[in-house]
Length: 178
Image (cartoon, one colour):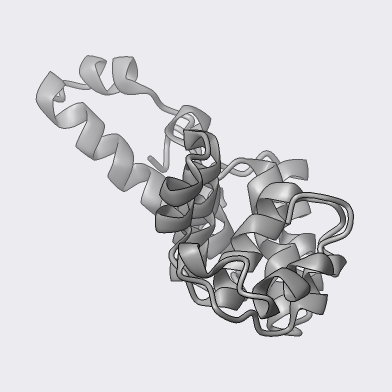
């Protein structure tokens, strides 16, 4: 699966070599070859093609936690949208790193035969325009809110709400608007 020749996976499945992991078949194994040697993405795609839980397969194979976390992150993105708009991309970027988002879009493009060009353009715009998607990107911080008289216990919640509004409309990301 993690070699440069994932086509062997189909043969291994057909011969019963993965039955001890609960895998008896793989649908469209040729799709794995289109994943540009991204081993973690290929593992994620393999799980989806075999209809097995990434978490359970990670556990059975005793992989490191980073692969499990990677799969959880891609599942999170999938739960938001298979063709995310700019606002949804910002929500995804709150949890996934840039490479994981690119991997997710690559996965969607290949496995759902979906054009993600607009998603990739939006992703580039987010970075080029320094649009906020994390609390640290806001024009205000916790210290500023405390100076305005907010209680320390409310600051985190207020910053979250402000970020959610800025994610929807980046033009709000200035001290006056916030």
